[in-house]
Image (tube, rainbow, N blue to C red; front, top):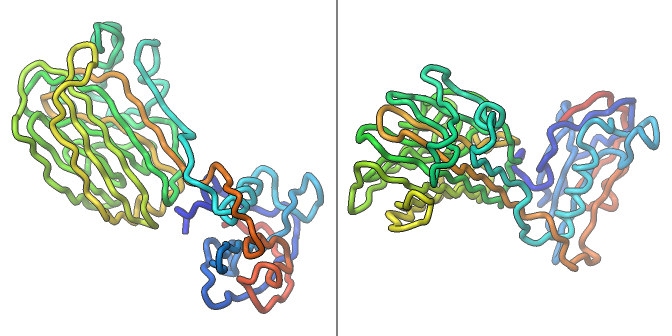
Length: 350
């Protein structure tokens, strides 16, 4: 269950030296979140009356303390911390990661984004942005994708937002915004989005809310009453919420605005719920992206992306039924595992 909160930020869990683990099975009502590479449980959860139980089938220390612990270069500390927070029934959190790019500093486009298709490449300029400030020039006839190098951990319950200002000049093309599992790629999903991603492709009078897996694109059409053509700035915002494993809600918001970025007429707030995407859901990280295709938008400015998580502040709800069991003989205290048979395990990733 890679999107589970206990695995947020956990990309590997390895053992530097032989260590005891337990050959165990799950009790009724328990859920396996992660397993060793031989199939035995590593992380197991179970609701218990008013509390939560987490069982970690490994020693709690790293090799910094004892030679039979987990490798400190892996994500063992994050795994233990996440388990404690989840078992304590942590409250909804606040933003933990934000990317904000104003394109006023030279090198931001090439330094902070991966270019999906280099010809014709976008370029950063000193006067094409809002209020005549720095921005990015989008060449006519482009079909390009710029993916942020900043990764956001994917987690059930988390909300992700991405927004940018686009300058409309022509009348035949699309802009794109959203989140992808790719670190680089081309527009091959929707009109301005990649495969392996969720986002929107938009134009002056509407667009599409794209849900693209590894091989195909599914779209929901969106239109507003008054189509806009000519030279205008727009502000586009996409909000994505991971509601459960592989399932997402997506909201598109679009405003017309003046040359200084002041928001004016809001054209739409449209939400699609229950988008199922196993490709995105299986990822540990997602990356915000900008896209544009054909002949419409000629500039983009003020890119922002933010994620929130649900496990940052512990509420005082720890009680007798809240428990984290850690260790080779974990099952008696965790009440989620049974049938212990100690065995040595070497170099076993998630």
